[in-house]
Image 1 (spheres, one colour):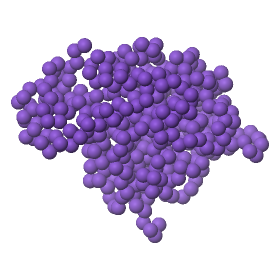
Image 2: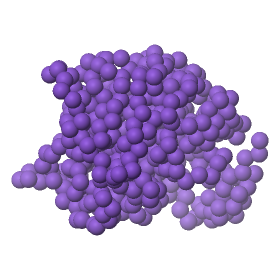
Image 3: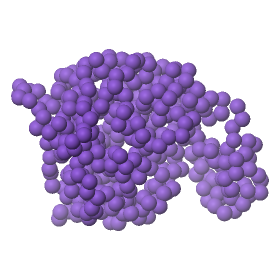
Length: 446
C-alpha cells in the first residue's frame, strides 16, 4: 500500500517523503524544503519533537489485543481503520460509521436517527470504582480485551475521568460528588453522531444526573437548540422519557426504550443486533437567537434536566433515586452562544473541549478569554498529539486574563485505541491522547 503524505513546507503530496534527520517527526517533499523549514522555525522545536517521538511506545501501551493492527499497521500504512472495522463487520455500521474515513459526510447528519443499544449494568449501589485505565473498565465490564468497543467509548470515558480527576488536577471548587452535573462540551464532531455512547455515563455515575451541552460550529441547523432527555431509576436498566412535560414543540419524536435494548454484553455496541432508539426531541430556545452577555454565577440552581426528571417521575418509594441525562445541541462558537445557554441553564461545573486544536483555530481566542474570567468554571481540553497540546497550553497562557491554576499536559489513559497519525508528521497521534486545562483563581472576597 503506497501512502502519500504532505510536505510540512508546501503541503504537496509525496510518496517518498524526507524526514528531519534529527527528530524524525516532520516530513518534506525535498531537501530544499527541509532546509527552508529548519531556518524558518524547526530549529526551535526539533529537540522538543524528539521527546514527543519517544512517547510512541507509551501511547501504544494499551491492553487491547488488537493494538498491533490499530497502531503499528495503521502508522506503517499496512492497514486502515476501515479495514480493521470491515474485518469485524462494523464498517459503516451505525455508531461505528463515524470512525470510517472512506465516506464524505456532514457531522450530525444521523444524530436524530442514531441506533442505540445502551450497555447493560446491574445495580452497583451508589458508587463505582474510579477507573484508572481501560483495563480497569474492561475488567469491571467483564469484556474480552479483543472487543473493540473502546474505540467508540473514548469520549464519554475521557469526560468521566476528567471529572473524577478535576479536584486533584486543579483543586477546583467543582466536586465529583455533586449529584447534578452541568457540562459544556465544546467542538463536538463525531460526538454528534455517536451521542448514544454518553448513555453509558448513567450506569457509571449512579445517583448522578448529567446535563451535557454540545456546542460546536459543526452542529447542523436542524439540531440547534434541540435536546434529548433520558431518565433511569436506580436498580433498573430501563431508560425512560423525561421530556414529555418539558417539550414545547408539537412535533417531538417519541421515545422507544425497553429492557430488550439493554443487552448484557459489549456486543450491544459492536456485533449484536441493535434496536432503534429515539428520544423526545424538543427545542428549549423556542427559536430565540438573541445574544446575552455571559455572567458566570456560582449560584446553585436546578438544571432543566433535573426539573424534567422531577416532573416526570411518578410516586415511588423514598429509596428510589432517578437519574437524568440531558443532551443539548447548539450551533456556533462558545463565546457567541454561552450567554444564551446560561439564560436557560445554570453555570456549568466543567467546560470540556475534545481534540480542541487551540493553536490551530484563532476562533478559540475569545472563548479562552471568556473562560479565564475569575468566576468561570474549570476548563479541560484534549488533543491528538503532544505538540498540539503543548501549543494549546501556550495559547491558553498567552490569552488568560487574571491568575490561573494550570493543569500540565499529560497522557490520557482513556485515549482512543486507534492511531490517526498526521499527514505531514510522524508524531504519535490518537483521539483524546493528551489532556490539559486551567481554572481561574477566584477572588478571595467573592
